[in-house]
Structure formats: C-alpha cells, structure tokens
Image (cartoon, rainbow, N blue to C red; front, side, top):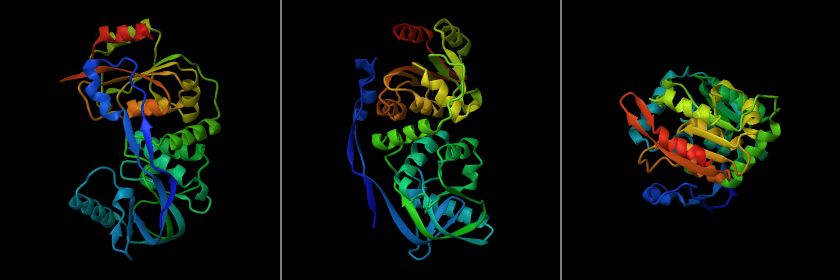
Length: 328
C-alpha cells in the first residue's frame, strides 16, 4: 500500500519577462501543469544488481522507479540481462533500504532535480531505511559530496554484486522530469543552504555559466560573446570546478545568471528569490523547457534568447545578447 506524501497540485508558471508574441507557442503548453501526487511504498524480499531492482517473489522489475524515459520492453530486458550477467552472482543481504534513483541519476541535472527530490519523500525514514546508492553513481564526486553535505544516511551498493533487501522503501518520482513539485523543491533547496558552510569567495553579481566544448554545446563565436560579457561585467564560471559550499556562496550574491541550455543551469536553485535567469536555448525548441519551469518554481525572473546550431558549434547573436544585457 502506498503512502501519499504530497497531493496532486497545479503548477502555474510565471511567464518569461521578455516573451514575444512570435515565441508564444514555445511556452504556452508550459504555463500550467498538473503535478501528480508523490508517494512511498514498501516491498519485501527485493533484489538489486547494478542499479536495477527486481522482485523474484512477484517476478516484477520496477521500471517506473528505476528507469528513465520511454525505453521499450525489449530494451529494458536487455539492460537487466546485461547487468545480471555482469554481476558476480555473489549475494549480500541488507535488512532495509530506500530506492530513489534511475538509470539517468548519474547526470548532474537528474541527480539534483530528480533523485534528490525523491529523497525528500523518504526523509523521515532514512535513519531506518538508508538510501541505496549504486557504486557507479557514488563514484561521481558531485553525488558523494551532496550526500555528505546534506547529512543523508546512505549505503553504497558495490558494482557486480547481487543484493537481497529484506524490506525496501521505494519512492515515486516527484514529477515528470523537467517539472517540479514546488514544495519538495523548496525543502531540498533549504536543506542545501542550511548545511552549506558558506566559505569566503570572490563574488560577482553577474555570472555566465560555461562548460567546455567536450560537452557538445560549444559556442562557435565565443570570443565575440566574451567581449560582450566583459563589457557588461559578467564573470565566466565553470561550476564543475567548485564544491557545493562554494557554488552556494557564489550564487548568494548573484543577481543575473546567464548560461546555455544544459545541466549547469541547475545551479539556479542556489539563487535568492527574484533574481534573473537568462537561458540561451535552441531555436524553435518546443520540448525542452526544464529551465524555464525551474526558474518559475524558484521564483526567479526568466529571460531567454536563442542559439542556432551550426556545423562547428552554436552561434549566439551578439546584437541580441547585447540588447538583452543592456535591459538588465
């Protein structure tokens, strides 16, 4: 039997500040979204191997709680068989644990805004039911660091072992990815800020988040854009180089956060209310509104401009960017 933690709710989003009539169709379907109820439930005699959970007793794998996206049945079976064949077949027993991840949880955006939000559903149970963290995820520095910073009780599932879990607490997803239960999100943000040590750091009220070209979103005309950033006193920051404590301290004093569509924009959650988020997003992209909806959930002012995909990278129009930064 499931226990409902948060009831279904309607999310009404703030409109982009610089929304033009020509771009209305990119956003209208996101202005209001129903956020489903969030819940937990318990299963006995469960098995886990390499980030998969399975019940032999019910002959069921819990695809809605451990898989991301719309993989076909055959694709899921292949993943399960691959993980099982990779396992050592040695069985370890755990009395109790909490399941809160899927196969995308190793990505920064999905870790912070999907997995850690699922943790909030079980927060009152974690002393007895520790979070079960697959080793392949735990090896990511940002994952291990966040668990320790938040003071969460967890147990690392070593790769290639089969784990028998006598009683497993399973968390639902808190919303379809790219959407947010605002109460859960605010609880998570407050937990980060309350636990951060807030070191003394050099701060700038204007920050441009930038990741290098190996990520695949390189700005073709970056030298030209960098000139504009200098003109408007924007500091270029790669947040992958900073701890959570440092990121939270830096963004506490930030008023304008600018960046390309990508996981780096997830760090907007550390901004104070009513600050400005400027997303450089793909031209005519109707589907990827995760950062628009996140900025609204964080009570930020959302601005946008577009990049165009070229053969050698993304092109950002310097005149449009200059005009927007002048307004800010």
